[in-house]
Amino acid sequence: MAVNILIIGSGGREHALAWKLKRSPLAGRIYAAPGSEGMRACARPVPMGALEFDKIADFCAGGDIGLCVIGPEEPLAKGLADHLAAKGVKVFGPRRQAAMLEASKQLAKEFMRRNYIPTAGFQSHYDPASAKEAVRATKKWPLVVKADGLAAGKGVRVCPDEASALSAVEDFMEKRIFGSSGARVVLEEFLEGREASVMALCDGKDFVMLPVARDHKRLRDGDEGPNTGGMGAVAPVDLDAETLEKVRVDILGRFVEGLKKEKIPYCGVIFAGLMLSKDGPKALEFNVRFGDPETQTVLPLLKSDLLAHMLACAEGRLAGERPELHAGACATVVLAAAGYPDSPATGAEIRGLDRVPAGAEVFHAGTAADGGRLKVSGGRVLGVSARGADLAGALRLAYRAAAAISFDGAQYRRDIGKEN
Ligand code: AMP
Ligand code: GLY
Image (cartoon, rainbow, N blue to C red):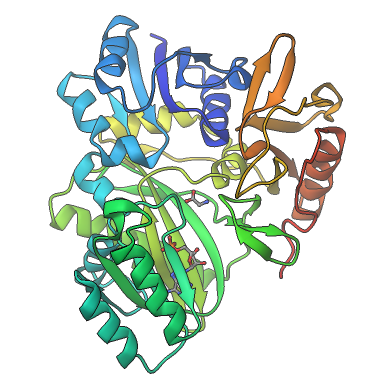
């Protein structure tokens, strides 16, 4: 029997999820809440916010939804999976208890320490005076200062000296620029190396790793300019066998062992942000959801049926699943609005989507339909993904597609996939 699906979220990640799920022979109707017009070819938008738990539960019951896939972290951290599970809805996305491993950096670091997951040394502080004292006692610079709670990716500062670390503590804990997310801070040892991200599907007992990806967080070429939600990504990242095995066993494996030991149920994606340091790979953070834009890069490489894998996770039988991958590589180039990330300009008309070369996929993130036209409605507007026999081929096609699209003030990096 076909499985009707509800996807929670409206970004490029959710569009990519809908695109991949639609290719499943098991899939029935696919909805997205709130979704977007740009993803209509894959999922029908339903006007409900990700935090309208009762509405979502009613929709699942009324629409005969066989699987609800939760994209963003906020509804997870606020307990949407718990709410739906209590009403008998099958959910792909962990419950609140596990989501706290993303929503509190302190809980995450303590979990990592207890479970021997390689990570940067740290201490946490509950009051600004003790945090400042620790900053003044610091001998090794830079120091990384992190607001404990969710801060839309902006709660981490790499501080080169005492003055900048003290001002980070003041901003987070005293001025509360991220509200209660700054009630506690984590001070962390600075790790050097290249970053990478890895996602794994997990049913709480077993996990399967997807190809390792790398995103580009800075706005401009050469890793310059402000941090963004991600300007592009590539996969797979070429890791040597020993490093890959450490990621699998010491990072993801110990994470799942920790969940089991601590009796934390888990169904969803484990996303590990990695630092490939000279002492081996270390976990910078864990997210409890698909990454954005990594999902737009990794899902095109998955040959097997994502819906089958997700259902296996929700039913606790992932051990029998064997995900298959396409050979080659995938690259995603994000087209952002003028003024992104600080003050994205909306309203520009988007042209050229009909000229995108065959084989490239365009995932909508910040677009809105206006009459017969498509307009910019958010900071990251579109993500263009393409596969190739190798990374160079994937990048060529993704850039040809990006060049076909135009809107006033469009900005995108020309060096996705390059080593900076
Ligand atoms: P997080 O949200 O904890 O992953 O941090 C966001 C970004 O800050 C990471 O992607 C890194 O670029 C940087 N970062 C975080 N922690 C560290 C660390 N201990 N050493 C070096 N860079 C870090
Ligand atoms: N691309 C990083 C994230 O989704 O958090």
